[in-house]
Length: 130
Image (cartoon, rainbow, N blue to C red; front, side, top):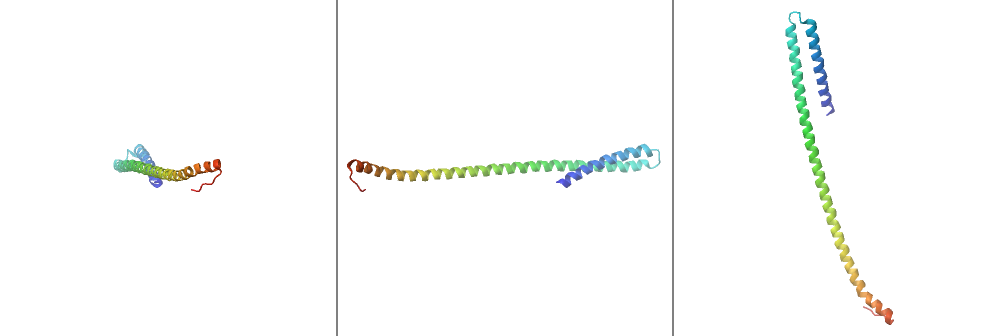
């Protein structure tokens, strides 16, 4: 990408330099025979460089559009991955909550079953085995 950008800037410099050369040539040598043919060649070179510059500009715009599309696609993929991660974390949290509730219910039942016996044994000083 850097090379392409440098070549694009170099084409601009060459275009500017060629236009200055044609202007200087026209000012200095217009009165000589054959100067028109040389100016025609130089003007053709300017048109070629301008066409190349326009083509490179179009290629640059296409590259920017493709980079934007790639960025948008990557952002969508990241958002989808984040959504999948959140759903997975939610499902794990739900499973953890269900397991904790089942464990609490098991221990609650055991605690409730032994609690009255403990109260009875302390009140009556009798050990009741269950």
